[in-house]
Length: 373
Image (cartoon, rainbow, N blue to C red; front, side, top):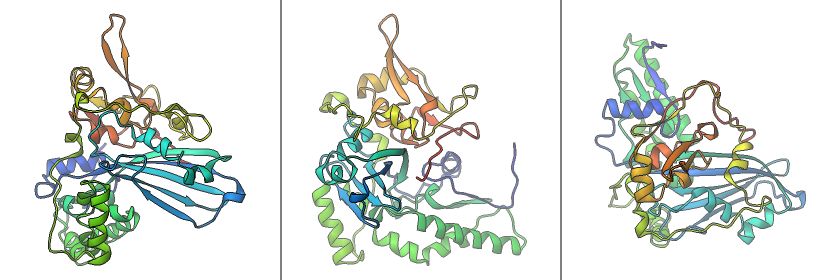
């Protein structure tokens, strides 16, 4: 199917399938730092009314992650005795044994978090990658006949864990530029009025002041917290220095031989859970007679490189148990891809150290169906 338009605005969210191709085709990131990402995992709970405090917001950083790994949590008290609890892990982590899903489960065992959730019922689960590189990782947002908006470009403000406002604003700016162009009789050229308007907007000022956030936090929790506080709270983001990202997240994993394996506790089924039971309550479904949407450039790489060198990190970084290494009858290893479990978070497409996994768009109705998430 071909779709024809004078201008097309792409708003697929983080690591958009088409956005990624457009960035590559038009070299939109030629003058940008490598993008940085995080994986956000979230659960919706119904809790004891006696513990419910509507409007209460809790944010944390660090634990149970080590201080050299970027990450933090959120817990929001909603209406109707519901609580949203989630954990974000930066995908620039180095230990291939780390599992973002299991770190989230451990986080819920902290006394301050357990106190709200014990006796409650988990009703929904989901996961999604987010961009975290900020202003310096933004690609060029326009190309002939179209533009990238929202998290398809990477407008999220990681220091505020906030991106919806940026998606709305960039959508408005791009729409204004497209409307004016069509009114002037133009089509299929570059909407340069969009990036020009962005640079004059409050959003640019906000992202500029937070431009060093992820770079400082990549240096560790304690130094990062100190420097972010100094820059943003004391100096208002108006500092004479700018830090740059030097490596993409998939380049950061160390060989397993250089890292300490992590033993995670077994789930209790009440406060902590496994991935398969979590996928079940995400209402994820893919038609079995459709082509797999998780593809490999080279089918030999997962075993020969990822398993051999990195102890099979795809079996841990995926929050939906899609990737599984199993033994053949002759004792050799092979990778099984349980594509029907996929919650479309895009983590595999981002973190795979060999960039051998390619997430493509599945059949139209496939994927998670999140209630109240």
